[in-house]
Image (cartoon, rainbow, N blue to C red):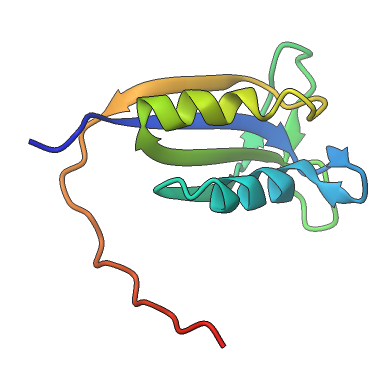
Length: 113
């Protein structure tokens, strides 16, 4: 039986920066550095949070809602959330159990030159 997998979702928007990088880019890089099982950054068509400010998708806007989905086991995900404390204005963060029905093929091993 495989370990129970979890889905961590982090809500933010394109207009949120940490230094000179967008927060979603910083989070994606941290996920990779933490060697978590996988992550996807999704752009929402429309979204709003507690401020009720509606983020809509327009070609020239840079204020679109972003959802970052990260899959792994519970302990690594909880530890990862603790590393986000220095990031301002990330929105809602949720964690839920998921049933993995199929995994993709293993990544090819890359030679380091």
